[in-house]
Amino acid sequence: MLELYQAEDCPNSADVREALSELGLSYVAHNPRLAEGEVKNETAKGAMEAIGGEDQIPFLVDTECGEALYGSDEIVEHLEENHS
Image 1 (cartoon, rainbow, N blue to C red):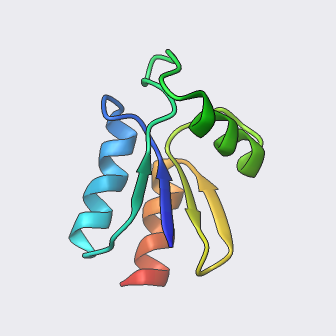
Image 2: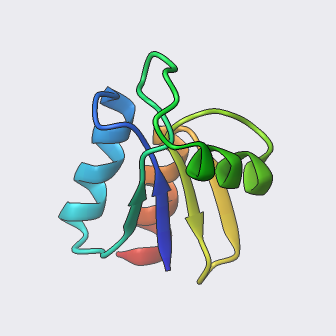
């Protein structure tokens, strides 16, 4: 399963969503906060920090590969290498 912690108004999150769509991958989106930092979902924010240790978006959890990644470039590279 792919879980993306992201913000709709974040350009880096948009890059990851675009890559997921281009690769035809299904994913679960969590929206813990806005790009500028206003928290919208404390539960999602807490889960993201518990898994990855940081309050940074985008953040991808790939349970199939056992990976948790921050940063749009790293996430897109991971997706292309492991799910294309």
